[in-house]
Length: 229
Ligand code: ADP
Ligand code: ADP
Image 1: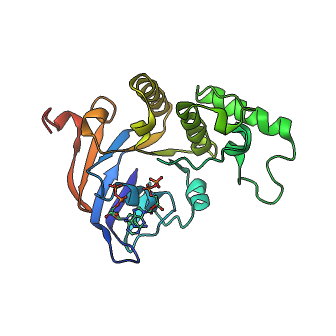
Image 2: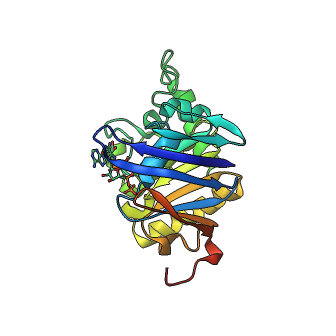
């Protein structure tokens, strides 16, 4: 279980992005974070994934206080993030992108065959088919997103965060993504799904926390939310 307590964030320019945010995420669920643009959703997930530090407040995972101060530290806690603007490099292959930066001293590409096999393993394990040798820039956006998801899952990930993942997908691609996410939840992952459209996560998420101007304005099981909200 992930618990946010009294989390606040003021950016250096004075913008107050989060004020006294508190809620819990149950393990093994899909939990939606909803709210209009500017509500603080990305900031909250950046704090969980080590891209920003909170100005105040705390986070715990299974009762242990955590304070990830880099994506690497978050990965060590089993947290992986799928960015809205992917963190991938167009001129590199799928394999290179997924394993980039994981073994900085020895480098993951010393043994190319091994790296490639690892990516194929990962793709099979999560049923996300990718061509390990394709140059990233030659892939469709939906295929690039699969690579971004595999990258986020590549380090014993237990908590997967997705920031507005449907923004770049067609309706059939969205359906496919949702099927994959349900399968990932069934395999035990906890999924945090950021969306500015409550409607789209209605059938997917078990719980929804709504942010409004940096504060929690709602936190309820999806089944308790009426259709016109
Ligand atoms: P959301 O994801 O809900 O759209 P954000 O967390 O991106 O919201 O933004 C919350 C507020 O913080 C907005 O007013 C946004 O402009 C501001 N903000 C986000 N990132 C920064 C930053 N790096 N520096 C200053 N202000 C920021
Ligand atoms: P992503 O969702 O992929 O992390 P965003 O589009 O939310 O990317 O933000 C891109 C970058 O711009 C981030 O580093 C974010 O912190 C920054 N940013 C967002 N809003 C503001 C703002 N109002 N002022 C300054 N920086 C901002």
